[in-house]
Image 1 (cartoon, rainbow, N blue to C red):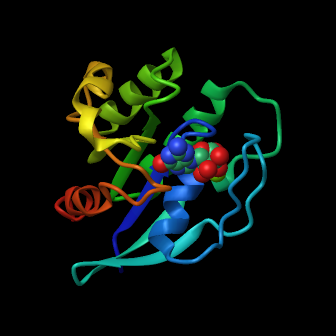
Image 2 (cartoon, helix red, strand yellow):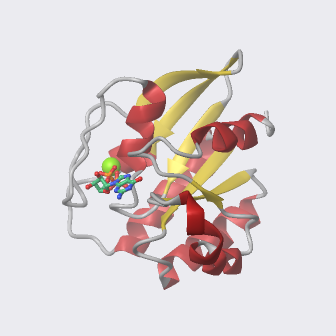
Image 3 (cartoon, rainbow, N blue to C red):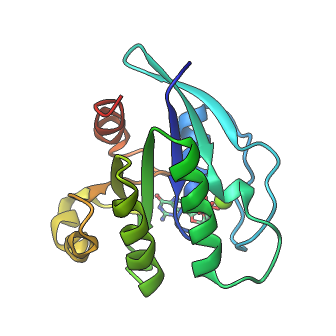
Length: 164
Ligand code: GDP
Ligand code: MG
């Protein structure tokens, strides 16, 4: 069967936006309010003749005011259990919080391949400075993207399929 790729990251980093861009159709609801229930969370994606199933783990989160860390842990566990490659999505505008580091530790311990992606890098001229702090997660080199502007997606997908 096809490899499974899961997107993990805290609310509002752009998981649904990235999912929709890669799926090529608007099938996941993008909302400024975190914790909104999404109906479709699986999509079939192909890149350079490689096909995979993409999961937006944000679609799995229940509608609740749960703390971010417990939601992220749950999503990360789903990704660890089901995915062949995990996209850990962060947001250059929000920066890093403690929960990101804790979830990064969890992902690293799982031994699953992780592609660390920094979203909302809308200006590629100065991304080197902006993404510097993300090296501190210790799960590899951060790859800058802008999901909404569709920047950096080719390099990100190359990194994903390299793990298949
Ligand atoms: P999720 O909660 O992780 O699924 O995040 P969403 O995909 O719902 O996006 C949260 C917000 O970030 C929305 O307002 C998106 O339009 C915005 N967003 C997503 N990607 C980008 C990006 O590349 N650049 C900018 N500036 N905003 C983005
Ligand atoms: Mg979402």
